[in-house]
Amino acid sequence: MKNNNQKGNTTIITIVSIVSIIVLIVLSMWLLPKYRIYRQDLAGQANLRQQEWEKKILIEGAKAKRDSAVLEAEAEVERAKGVSEANRIIAGSLQGNESYLRYLWIDKIADNPNVIYVPTEASLPILEARNKEIK
Figure 1 (cartoon, rainbow, N blue to C red):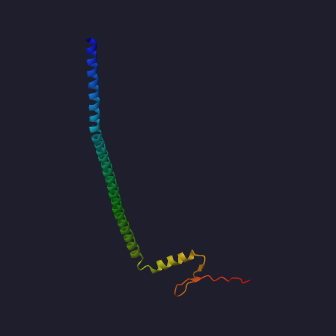
Figure 2 (figure 1 turned 60 degrees about the vertical axis):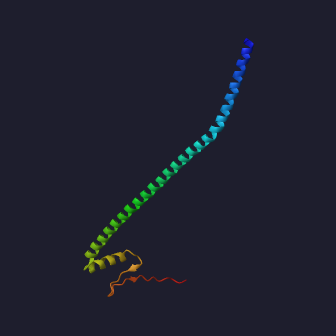
Figure 3 (figure 1 turned 135 degrees about the vertical axis):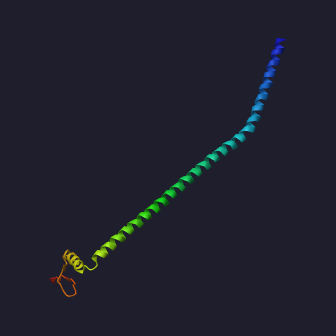
């Protein structure tokens, strides 16, 4: 009887094992496609978030460039205002100072070795004339 009982137990174990293997195969055939879809969905979400971050980085970079350009333009306007004010002051101080301006002009001409200043009625410089020896 024990022999018969052992054969029955072995048969039951074999049947249970075969049924378990079949259930695992069916279950894996059902789960694997779903898992692949789930994994692709997660990969797509990660890619979307990465692109959103890259977009935000580009937007912030563009905003920083815009802000920098605006501030540089404002600085250039302020510099131009300063130059304009300085020119106005200089122009105002030079009005009516014809002799000082003539002095500055003569002084500048004196720095040029090719010019000899000879006071004339028109106050025009006379360029130095050099004789070249012809061979």
